[in-house]
Image 1 (cartoon, rainbow, N blue to C red):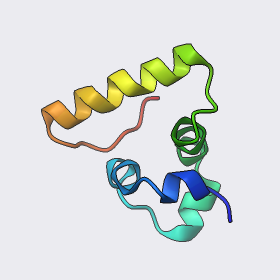
Image 2 (image 1 turned 135 degrees about the horizontal axis):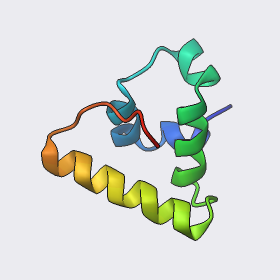
Image 3 (image 1 turned 120 degrees about the vertical axis):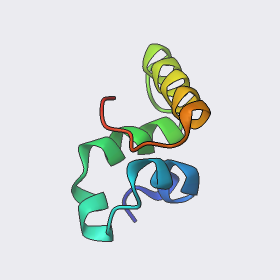
Length: 67
């Protein structure tokens, strides 16, 4: 199953806008967030995504688009 780790973290799916399954499978952003969720990103990228997610949650949940 593709994007397995991402699917286990519903908050990340919500931040992306709950894409339909076929869009999720093709999404470059979903691939990045799946690596993030699996903690496979380089530390600097992991930190960048952590900061962005924290910032978004504090502001009120717009869709992630500029990672």
